[in-house]
Amino acid sequence: TSINFCQNGTISTNCRTDQKPIKWGYYNDPERKALYNVVANLNRLRNNATYSSLFTSSNINYNLSGLVKTMIVTQGSTGIVVMGNFDVAAQTATVTFPFTGVWYNYLNPSTITSFGGSQSFTLNPGEYRVYVNQFVPLAASIISFTGKNNSNLNSLRWTVSNEQTVKQYEIERSKNGVEFTKFATVQSTRQGTYLINDDITAEIGKTFYYRIKIVDVDGSYRYSTIVTIVINQKNQFVTVMPNPFVDKLRVQINSTIQGKARLTISDLSGRKLLTKNITVIAGITNVDIEETAGFSNGNYLLNMITEKQQQNIKIIKSN
Image 1 (spheres, one colour):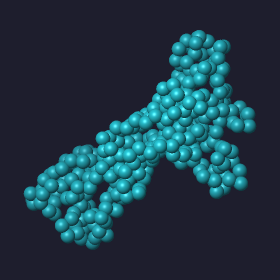
Image 2 (cartoon, rainbow, N blue to C red; image 1 turned 90 degrees about the vertical axis):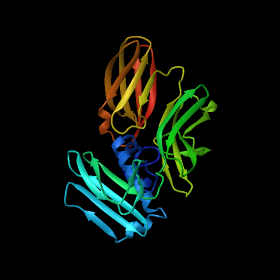
Image 3 (cartoon, rainbow, N blue to C red; image 1 turned 120 degrees about the vertical axis):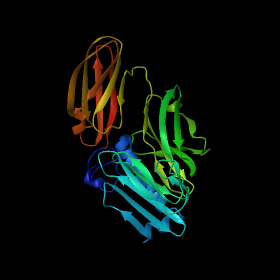
Image 4 (cartoon, rainbow, N blue to C red; image 1 turned 45 degrees about the vertical axis):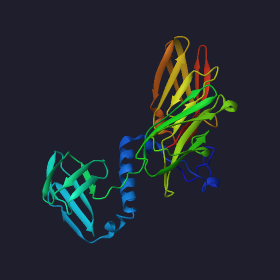
């Protein structure tokens, strides 16, 4: 995102200190999101009152000589045991835990029992584990977040795991996918599933973007992915997804007849950046637009014309 990015999508040196769009596309990449969760939970462990001292402890035993590497850190009666397979094939590690009793697999909740002797663990290629001898809950994670329009209501539903430390969920709404404001707060019930309706009676014919701010009891917070809801209009027959988009677009056309169609994408000054001639069926036609991967971040206008229908949609490129 250019340092001169303006909130209306244009570029100007007058906007150097304006708020810039967050790269929400990272949340939609499963591998990036998984890595984010690992780092977030390790930071959470570091800030835990019981375990914070272990991150500065000098009482460390490690074995880094083989393809399976191990590290054991202790402080008093508290311990962390880390093991990782750096090979491209499954390998077995032999580890002696510093204390007997139950140990918790921190990043992938499960338990083992240590009896004081050496124990064998088979790790898949690239697999790593972090064991702790006192239970520490993981940060809450939204498993799914969906939204759909029901007449004058936008219904939002989400499912959460590991919400032991969650205080509340703040639901935020946006009309441009960049600037969000809170419109509702839902208290955590520890039940894992939630539903809320947003009354958009006065807003029919617009596009809405929603995200969830997960607030923990200690005041820390994090955001969900963004859910986009496009409200049906009388003449609406085109859906763009995702919007905002990171690289390519998928355009879904619900045509009343089979025939020719023309798709155009322009910038806000009216300059045409892309034109495609398309054949549509009577029903649903999906078209992938890969050229948008080369567009600069900002707002654009997509225009679709068939023999019987026409529609304009505002689209947003945001990495």
